[in-house]
Length: 467
Image 1 (cartoon, helix red, strand yellow):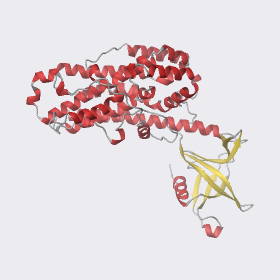
Image 2 (cartoon, rainbow, N blue to C red):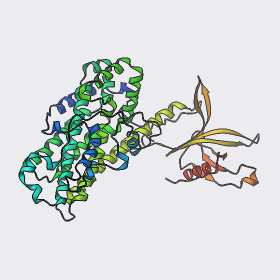
Image 3 (cartoon, one colour):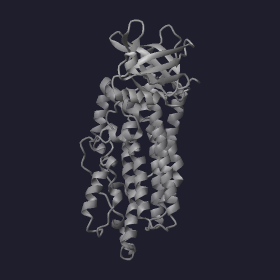
């Protein structure tokens, strides 16, 4: 198997030395180029920060029920899994997927009161002057509100991104308290994401300038999906490491902690913390899909826009899926890096664990029957998608680890067999493990006993898997 050519970005920045000064300079040049796009939304003062936006919209939806003649602005609320602003706190090692990141991110800080008011499409002066509200059927008004919601929520999102970039990323004092690599890893490509949001909003508002009767938002989304893919996938992929890094800096770097508290106290930040700003892109890319789905539900089945709406939803879904894969890839690599430090191959030739495509399937303790002295010893199994490692626990310098006793290619050189435990005098949760060991090139058979029957069933199912 080939050695993994993982970059520092792939492993979440565990070793910053692999990034050259030239790469950082290129990154900064790209950020400066992205920031050259300057756009001020005409609706800037009508919307709160994105962190506060949802709570406000829910209340606004209640207040305007009568005004809308019982129009349900379904995009003003979102599904159960996203019912609170996604503000990411500490992410545990057990978070195993992009969806679990979403759940973990739903832990909120104290809510800051909105300083701006939100608005509806029917509240726009140009809409009132057009007379459309008297002519359009309720269904079309609902559809217009949903499409305007895409615009309004992007305004709110850009408001928050602007603070993230102008107050946190651009802080000279903050840059001085961090190494260039720390600063780069902390903020990732958030400047590029802000520039992408500006361009997207420019096109959305440009369409609204042409006609107060909104249409073709799905075409604009499709047009921007390649750029969304370029900027969102690496950012969301890096979020696990980014969160860990923030926690470490807050705990270990007093200058960083002091500076962050000062920046967060600025009135423009509205008592929102750094973490709530860093998680914004993750929140937004999932929200866009939900808004498009709401628009699709309200659109007539025979409308010309249906086809491109479905394409836009599929394109955003693909981006979310790529984000999911990126997060899982990082988790797998981080897990391999950790196990590579924990496993000691002793005098046998060591096996490099961090290789491309490898990931951990299952791990856990077992008891091995020692034939010579008719007793059991404790062993530990690490089953990867292409390798089985059996070891014993060891302790050194007050730290636990594992001494590898045998390893074999999986599944090619691994076979399990049920046994008549009573006849062989074995515990009921026992089975035979046949190996053609990688280091000795000799076949061996081990009598193993799991701790419970359910553990035995799990191991048997996994070890019998043919890939």
